[in-house]
Amino acid sequence: MNALPKGRLVGVGTGPGDPELLTLKAARALAEADVVAYFAKRGNNSNARAIVEARFHPDMLELPLLYPVTTEIDKDHGDYRSQIADFYEQSAEQVAGHLDAGRTVAVLSEGDPLFYGSYMHLHVRLSHRFPTEVIPGITAMSGCWSATGLPIVQGDDVLTVLPGTMSEFELTRRLADTDAAVIMKVGRNLPKIRRALEATGKLAKAVYVERGTMPGSVSTRLAEKPDDKAPYFAIVLVAGWSARPGAPGAKP
Image (cartoon, rainbow, N blue to C red; front, side):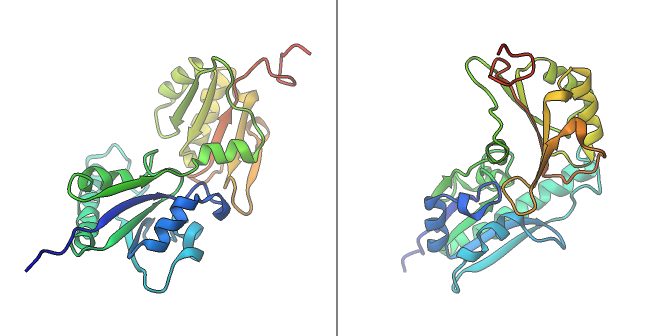
C-alpha cells in the first residue's frame, strides 16, 4: 500500500487588519487550504482569523491554538518559558497530524509570518519535515505609517524596530542611536516607552497608533495622549527624514 502523500504547510500573512490589505496569493492559499490554524488567547478571538473569516469555505477545518499563558507570568520567568515552549511543541504536533494525513494547513499570522509572528515557532519545527511555503503579509508598522501618512525614513536614515517589552535602559540606549523607530508590543509598557522617548528628545516626534488600518483606528501625537492606557498591539512611530519639508527644524 502506498503511503499517503505528505500535506503542505503554508504560513499566511493576513496583513495589519484591513481585509482589503490581504494579498492575492494569501487569498488563493485560503481557498485551497483543507485546514486553517490560528493562535489566540484563551477566551479571545484571533485577530488574524477575524481579518480573513469572510474567505473561509464550508469544507475547511479550523484548528485554534490557544496560548496557555500570555501576560499572567513575566515573559522572562522560567515557568513562562517552560509553558510556552511546551505549547509550541504541542501545537506543532497538532499541525503535523493534519500534514501527515495529506492535508494542506494554512497557519494564519497577523502582519507577516516571519516578523515577530507566532507562526515561526511552527515553521522551525515543521519546515524540515513537510513541504512548506511562506506568504508574506503587509506588516503592522507599514500599515500604520501608511494609514497616518507619516513618511518614516529617507536617504541614509536608519530605522530601528524595538519591542516595548525590553528594558527601559535598552529602549533608551537604542532610541538614542537611531534616526527613526518603530516601537511594537506597547500595552502596559507605554509609561516606560514614553520615558525613554523623553530621555532621548524624541517624544515630540512620536506618534501613537492604535488598531491601525482597522475600524476604530486612533492616532495621535504621543505627547498629547492624556493617559498611558494602550492595547498590546498599539504601535509608536518616530519618523526620520528630519530635513523633509514641514518637519520640525527643517529649512523652509
